[in-house]
Amino acid sequence: MPKPYTATLRPMRIQARAGSSAEKKYYEKSALPGGIWPMPKVLAPGIDPSPLDDLMFHGGKVVPQMEFQNIYLGSNSSWKASDIERIDRAISLAMHDRRLNNVMIQYFPGATLACDMRDSFVLDDDKPATLDEPGVQALVTTLFDESLIKKSDLGTTMFNLILPSGTVLKLDDSSSLNGLGGYHGSLHITRQGKQVTLYYSANVYSEISADGRENGIAVFNRPWKNVVGTLYHEINEFRTDADVNDAIQNNSNDFLGWTSRRGHEVGDQPVFKAGELGNLKLVFKEVKASTSNRKMPVQFMFSNAMHGAEGPISQPHA
Image (cartoon, rainbow, N blue to C red; front, side, top):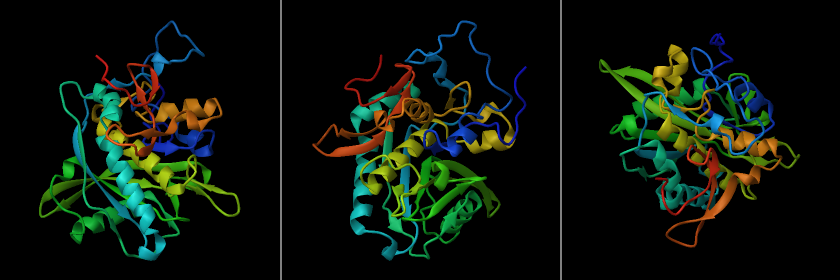
């Protein structure tokens, strides 16, 4: 019998640090609405690669041609201009990179990939001490209502809220102080009699504080690189599973795009498996761009073709 759907049993839509309580809460208890899909009778436990973790397409929304916009919370004093420049440049380069997209194209048969960046901006508001999902959704709604974001192509655009140093991100009863790196979602609002859907992500400025406490997932040697790794995770999960919030709220697989049998999205299994081996740097890497000598800090995504995490490749899989 499939497990009943509950608030603690749902598709995953977050980035979580391996071995953390956030990972335990969301990864180990995740499942598809309606229950876990039946597993094959013959299992091969402990063998890597892991075909049982392959993603399946459920018929929901995917976004091969998309845009995104980085919105930096807090004021200009909350940010180093050099950090903003590096984050914007690196994530734009990564989302356009041919060899990285050669991994992702397998989830969009017959389509071409495009991912363009709208101009980023600093919100110029008080730096929040904490931010939970109701706060994220309220902020995205305000951005729309006050015309701080363009209202065109909203169905294919993701607004990335990037938290400043020291701000704690929350989701339910988990936080970035116990492993949460970021998450993506959507909300529906009605304006002038029409429904508007807004897609968002919330991303921690992952770092080790002066007292040694980790906020988010601090893998790279510079916090701005950790931000790029989280953005790469969330943007690719929006591409491949845009309406995961609707699946959760409606208790229906039909809204899902690509997830595993347990509801894990394209970025989840690589972090979990690297954590089992005690080395997140197996999947969080700086890779050379296809068109320059610049390096991009990214998190490798799950590849059905390889049944596991895969880095940049010269040719897409046949």
